[in-house]
Image 1: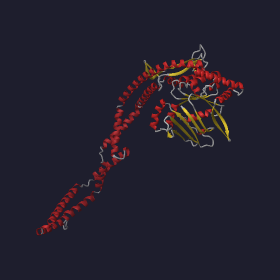
Image 2: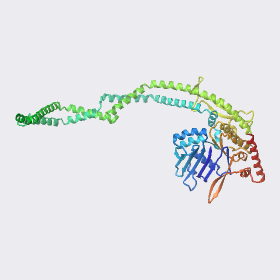
Image 3: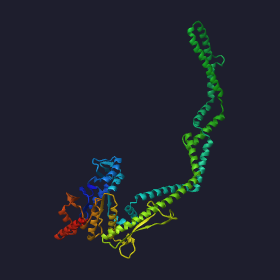
Image 4: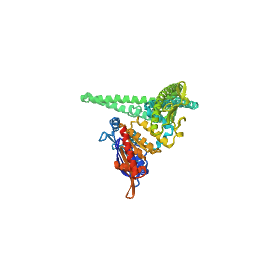
Length: 578
């Protein structure tokens, strides 16, 4: 439950700290005192939209902190999330949510003092507090809000999730089918383009590293005359084939003869003789290799032209498909795979169409199961709401939940029919009422007055709160349009939501009969501090409560005081009876 709310520099609030108890907490005060602002601050710290207009004039930032005491059952669930996000606090049974709003538009969310994403703050907030604002009265008139209320009462979240998951799967299958069934002319154009790419690359008959080999060959062919001339000169220098010139081979031969004679006279020169003989053999081999290289040299202008054309072809393909031969070949493989995929599109289409039909039958089956559970729950919901309305002086009102299904030629299969569906299932749900005997039930928006809508909303909230596990429930002027006579019943019902320790309830009200049921009563007022207006909150003791209730009755005279005391005596008897 919420144990403390701290607000600073928020709207007209300079600094405010409210310590709350379990049970029914009631906030009263004159209109404009700041009650709704306190709830706005509460909504902000739970992850609501930040608006810089909330920053108090003259301040550069606003702060809101909310401290919660976690009950053991909730604590175990939260401990997993806290451990996952690394948000452990000093006290395991307390949780601190914080929000800082700066005038420059930036805002910061924290849990136990550590910065978190706003989505995580909202994840925590929605499990800790449920705020029922004045706008809920209007939303009740919108049929789109009725189905979620029915499912919340019936606890059908898991069933809805299974339907939604199958609907999402069907949505993806249909998206793939639409892609496969695109305009046939576009598909044919794509096939022609891919085939051209494949044929162009295949006809080039490329090999890895061919471009580098061709560039080397082009360099050699372009310099053929110089290569022939230089190779002939080298062979001549080594072998001495030119007349009237000594070659390296001749000089080595002469040196070998001289050293051979020396080795006969001195055996120590034998190793040198072997070395020079080896050199002679090497030079002979070198000469032979150069001659073989020269014999391969062929000044062929046609070959040079071929090589240059081949290089240009490869460069053209590089400009189209990639900077290397490897990229060109990859582009060809990709085109082949896409062609195979397109050629198999008919088979793929048949498979997807079969999957689509299976999902439509599955959604129909799941949807009908969900629909039956909704219908059973709607009977219980109607009965409970009628009992609540009877307590609220609407004893002749009849409440019904209308469930409709619409035909759709593309819908789910249900008993041979095609039924429209969405993520929530097959049903369109609308709440109907009849406030006068003999009149047929009609939509709320066409029948209920403002006061009746408020009472119907309270009846719904009372019934739903019994299955709601959110520990703290906040009601902002749920008594809107309700008179004082019914206010006592409203107060008793809201107080009943706290027993046995199911919920902590916080209520903003103008009705003294409702406020009389408070376990803790707070008065909200405005004060002038210096030249600035600020909101203050005071917890009322028993004497102060009588004065506040008397003021809410309209005066502070003895008659009003007696009325206030009468309200508290009546409440004490009502609480004692329970």
